[in-house]
Image (cartoon, rainbow, N blue to C red; front, top):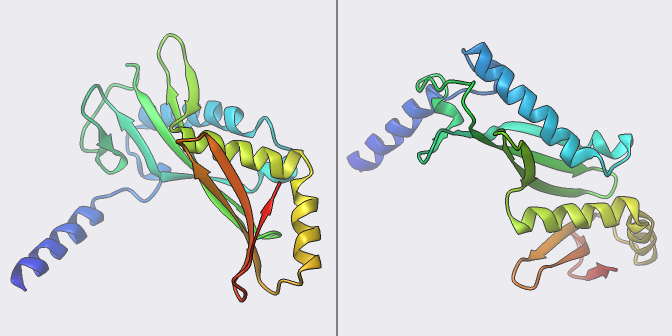
Length: 187
């Protein structure tokens, strides 16, 4: 029992030193570097969506990371370890997407490398597939299909999920209800 309490105390202390957001970074140059990468990852992620849908994406710094060389240091150590922002490092930015109209929640991670050939890419194939599913929903008439199906089956608490299968490189958009056991695949 004492060991469990000591471990819990350790995690609480470690969390106390953690930053709660991008504004907590003490080094202004480092914060500017992360902000400039965020602008590039924003444009990479949001270009395919209309302004109305762009507002549904939220950048969360809590899952961003700064990787100096081979050893990764998560955001909570940015003030402890003082990297040189002028050096070329990589960042992983975490975005959350939530649409309360159809009750869809998903997240996407974007990898950014700011070397000589600055690039932004999806961190995993799963992130790319989720992005493709969002494009299908919002740019290819999927939202109308979801609303029509929800109305026709008279769901009381409908929600939408995106299931991804990286092995076969496919995704499924599924309409569900919290009160009924039925699932409907949206094509």
